[in-house]
Image 1 (cartoon, rainbow, N blue to C red):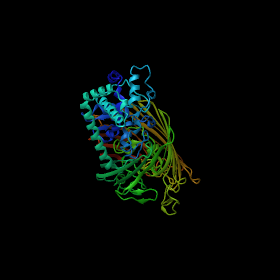
Image 2: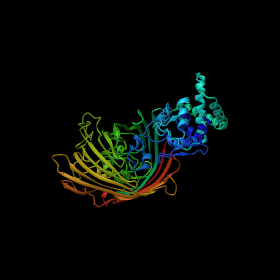
Image 3: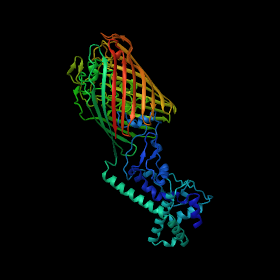
Image 4: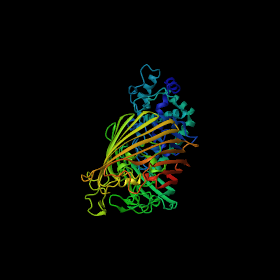
Length: 639
């Protein structure tokens, strides 16, 4: 017995897995309680910040802390931005849903199971040199444990700490046998061998016991003071200075303004695979129904209704200071529910989602690395394809009630679709008019009537360096708008046609990102929006197009820092039909362009500072407007 015991320790690793009887039970608490082990969510590695962290945790965690295969989705098309935006920006990427577990239940599925027969170990055969030793230990003492997949992994190397932990487990088992009057099962020579091993590993055993005691104490403290066993809290605070010059002729430059946006997000999991996302936000941007107080209105580049403009920053809502459903005002820094969404898997490749406060970008992954309202590009133009923003799809206020699905066709192909309606909570359309032909409930009423959108995205990843997203959206609007907030022509999309005219939109677009290297990526998009009057009394149509191309840099000058340079054409009328005008009255039609550059400095893990600016040439497609520059200094705090 003794020779098998010692041989297995040096060769096959006899105590490599019986170590699981003790350290694996402590490891879940260690993973949660030990703040010296940081999880790098961006690349999935576990980083050791404490040089004194035991090899026990490092070696075992590498095998035990493995993501469940059922949670793996299509590889992220924007891995860095996915983790920055998850549950913080309006986008909630569902590549890997957030799961919240209690300290006591964490990793329970990865614990090693007690083996009652050596035949339960699928990778141990009768002709293995240590088979008899394992058989004796299982049948006589019951101090062998196997991995959840019924393997033993006897050829894996182990550390002295692992050996000590396994020895301690066997000693505990023998003590149990003696205490229950089964001491006759313990041979004298076995006791002598174990006593010798106990003496040789006395220091390691003492260290291990001390570590376990410390972990248990810290776990008890965390459990007593934890926020919730099922819910995780994260948040984002943006404070930015914004200044601008140019704009409409004869208008003076606006003053530099200081704005903020605060978001708190609660992510709750009931099964470990589902997610209920509840988001609260407050901001001090102004605008209202007529845009008063907004930067865009001061520049003279905003629409007279709802303040749509090409001069809008990435982190301000589409309808600041306004509940667009009822045209009622929202006070500065009033707390609002901007996200309420539930995501749950129903099959291996199929996930459903539904919520009363959602956005298209919650379900559709951002292909471009420029997306990140608090972290990346500083303009609304750069972050997403206009087709994703259609119909208020990225309002920043969770405008729509929406439901849809995520279908992982293959590891490299992903299809998502949703139906959204911004007026699902309204029973009747108001008879009162805000302006001629426009009700005070301008989007209509009812879940399946009034304004709505059906949107889809096919995401394709043909190679690790290439990501492609194809979008289509069909929309119906009670009023004559695009609902993107990207240009002043968004309102009165059919120029020369009354704002109260209902319209239908068919929008197509594509986005591509090509990573030339791990730190440099080329990205761009193209979009076409086809707008038609939905009224039998009006014959009018308009086509809008837009495109963007840019270069994104990661770890520029310092790890964690990013930068972007991009150029493109904002939405612009390229064709009209019927009674729609190609050039609105008073405009001098010309193609607009957008040039932007920014640099994000990651000061700490939770604080970043992003200086940047974008220049609008021929803003709003009107050469009468002066070239406009918008400068931003954005500070973002995440927790």
